[in-house]
Length: 237
Image (cartoon, rainbow, N blue to C red):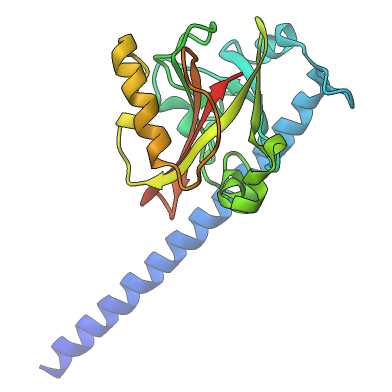
């Protein structure tokens, strides 16, 4: 009996040891991948010009030479979100690949594969991982601070494509359990009206914004290690 107990104790200790070792390796790899993405993003700044008068110039031709999946560039005030945006043939690829299309646990910033990104999308959905240090979409949680969001300048998201600059005003922000509803991209006019009303009512804060006859931008990232999602909806202005 004692031998049996000793055996289980050793087995438990080994399980804990290997579990801790695997966790440490995962954390090390994750940080390495985040640092790699920081360097990639810095290198891409060569093709991005943001002047004091808020004029933004993006050399999409050069960016597309590096990655032909390039579709835009996004800037969210009061966050670290200042990234080139890509689009794949599914919503899985850029969860584990960086802008250089190399395997990377922290992924990249990407649009829903169902979006056209030509200005016609009723709900343009953009995804990114919640990473430590506030990189990728990790700093979007800053906007959960009501004092930050009260400032109208902090409500304006810029999204630039080859077709030009579009600005969107945040009108809804909330956390929710994983679901597909808020990332719906295809609607009839009646469905879209109901959709905008529903997601506005979900907002943690009341934000004055007109939604009539306007398309929207949705940002989505994980919260609480994937237990919840942070959703931010902004209307085109």
